[in-house]
Length: 172
Image 1: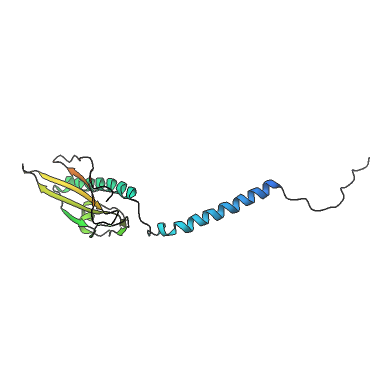
Image 2: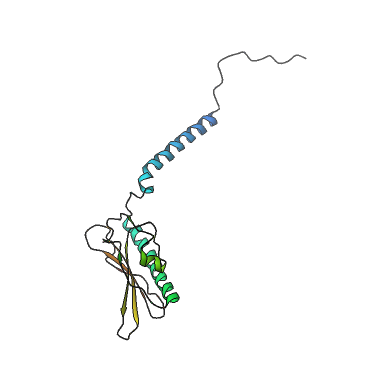
């Protein structure tokens, strides 16, 4: 029995089409991921502005966290704390501004909105006509830079219950 004849030498066989397609897809995906990363670098550094919707969502979450911190402080220490508006001035156009961790009043109640914020925060404590404290937790933003602030407010009653978020001039 003789072995089958060897094929005649000729041009090299082209690579498998599947390998070529896989290689092309991988190169394209790597280039696309690099382009997305380069475009998103300013946002990662905090250079980008938040949209009005993002600021509104942040306001609702953070004003509730602020009221929780105020109530927690009262539960532990027996009184409410008035905190002046900070940062001054109100952040504008969705730009983030630094919020120091060592701000004495906010640190004392345990409120930490993060290293940069899009909102101004305040706690007001006033006396009601019947002698009970009326507490308002506020967050303000000026998303369009026209000087008119959107105001997000939650009120605490004497029992520590919170009202729903009240919003004035949203989108301003």
